[in-house]
Image 1 (cartoon, rainbow, N blue to C red):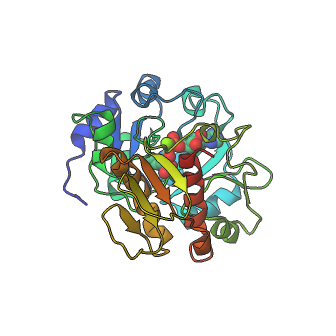
Image 2: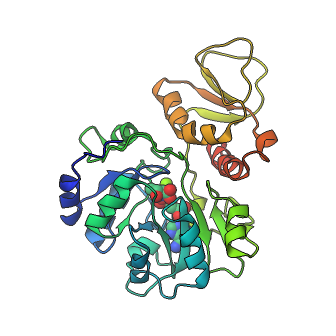
Length: 313
Ligand code: TXA
Ligand code: MG
């Protein structure tokens, strides 16, 4: 990671109402000043994102929560104490002055403090930023600066922090429902949340959200151009990229094996999706991961959710 990187040109862009891509520990975000509607509109235009899909507000300090959130329940203190900075987004009741552009007209706002030194230093100097993942809508989230440039053009302003650590987007938990509800599974899982909240946490019953509580869930996300299949392969062909858990006898460069390490698979998944498209594979075959659930419960849930969306079932 380049700690010597000069953030000033990027800070100036944000202050002028432009958008800038920056690294977080999950995926790269496309940031804009959370109080500047013209800048926020540029996010939707750049991504081709539907405006009924709300954005996460990123802060560098827990005290900034009160700018956006009406009342801060005790549970939030416990969660931020345990998991911030980190890959946890918390949905709370919003203050009236929070822009409708951010919340898509909902009465709630999603808040997160990313665990990345460049992101924290950047936000400290710009103020809170709204930031969706920095990809063209419908493409896999970017886990490298190069992914952002591939989507938005070689001259696009991106703060290069190297590959992101986690590789899948943050866990989104809704604290405005009676039972805290995981709207999007991520590295921080149900058990870890329950241990801190001393209360039951539920997954949203329909992970595809036909009646969307988290509007983003209704869009088909994370889809590479190559067709994705979730099955055990019976033979191997050249036009397919294989993401397996056990190395087969016949080794070949289009066969990748994670040996049950779902954390490593999460870290790489989107890069592999993008690789498949760059190298013009027509199919991606992903072998089942169920047998590794107990070893990696939260990564299992997060991967299953992203794979399901990529397969389109
Ligand atoms: O890891 C992450 O969360 C990354 C990095 C850049 O921080 N960001 C990210 O943003 O994944 P985005 O916009 O790609 O996904 C945000 C998700 C969407 O599914 C959206 O619908 C949901 O959070 N969301 C945002 N505000 C919400 C709200 N008020 N209520 C329910 N869901 C909300
Ligand atoms: Mg996204």
